[in-house]
Image (cartoon, rainbow over all chains, first blue to last red; front, side):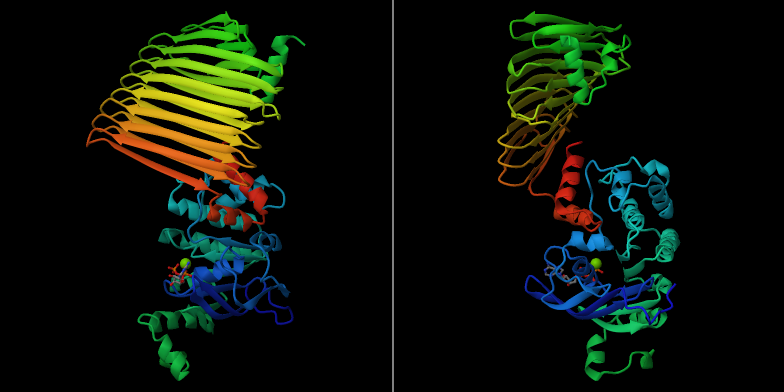
Length: 255
Length: 312
Ligand SMILES: Nc1ncnc2c1ncn2[C@@H]1O[C@H](COP(=O)(O)OP(=O)(O)OP(=O)(O)O)[C@@H](O)[C@H]1O
Ligand SMILES: [Mg+2]
């Protein structure tokens, strides 16, 4: 995956995105590009605006940008509803997945499919290391937090999206299973998807082709995942973003 | 078509499997209007039915220590568009007995039908009873359903009931269940109703936890649209040490529907605990947006959430 095909226009282009929540500026000019079949990691500390970016890309209620544009396959989707974006092939695996009373796992996994496909449901469950006995379980509080996270990823995979936004797919998942998730992302890409991988775990970012660092609602650096994550590890705790922004120094110089 | 055939057809339309009503291994009772069309008793359970001018009186008894393997099928219905059906019933579960009852109430042609149910239920010591009632009403909404039950759960007994009205128009529903639970007994009441048009739905649930360690759950799920009106009055009393009660009410409204919930929680012992949660409003936004992010439109997403909640 990953080798950038410069002849093809990017799948997603986020241009100067600004968003306020309850009068507070949360996204302050986000610029981001994702190519086809690319894994783009977004790293950032708690509260840096990662989930807000995910909700804004998905078009959630209350996440209408007051400045900037979102282009998907060169089409401006800034004004489209969630459903319309979903139908275009954009979807989101939520950081904290919702619970659904009375909705079976099999049904939940099939919702995003164009046609019900039992084989695909089985494959999606297997991809997140859950056996077939989960099919008839209910996607409610009777599943553990980690199981619901896995199902969320399975649902996204089952849908065959063009762009999967994964908001911290590694949170609440035991360390031994991180490999399963990495493999699942790889499979999505092989099937044609691009992935926006939100995380604040440096070690997880190694599977990405490109990484961006978000700080206070701005992308402060984009590039090689190894370099960006090293920078994140060394310069974000404690944060020296302001110094960098003020002096305009290159990050890598000081690593 | 005979009355029996007609009611069987309606029973099938309401989701029932008519072969159970013909099977000799399955205890069953079929009542159409005020006529008892069929009664099949099996060993350990007796079902006496007596005709009344406007309905039937039924006495169901499960002998002590008897475990009825297959669910007992009860079918109540009325084929005509107008009329009254009154079902006066007593259920008696002997000590240590266990049985499950599946009741189907079908009024496929109802324009002005009144269905009155008055039950007295006694769940003996250590006995278990599960009662599920599913309604099928026609599209006209001309049904008045008045189910009323007084239930006594004796020591270590277990009573679970489920009332489902999600097919056809609800009409006017006034559901009123009262249960007294003795020491270490359990009572769980669940009511699920979908209201449309000018349906009027009232759910009254009273759970009194009178014995030490008694447990109770009063759960209701109501989805309303158009100008339907729903009210849930639930009272739970923790009257004895270590009794535990919970009230869980969700009402989803759309259009100009109105929902009310009045939970009363009363505790008379400082070692008892009763909790309640009530969520009234529109569909949970996160659930909705999750489904929409999979490409479903809003209407479809709401439908899936509501159906999940209402068991449809
Ligand atoms: N409705 C809101 N009103 C005001 N501030 C908000 C609102 N929602 C989020 N925020 C703030 O926006 C900032 C970014 O939040 P966001 O959830 O996007 O962070 P995050 O990077 O996803 O963090 P985490 O790693 O904890 O998931 C936080 O400071 C948060 O408090
Ligand atoms: Mg977040």
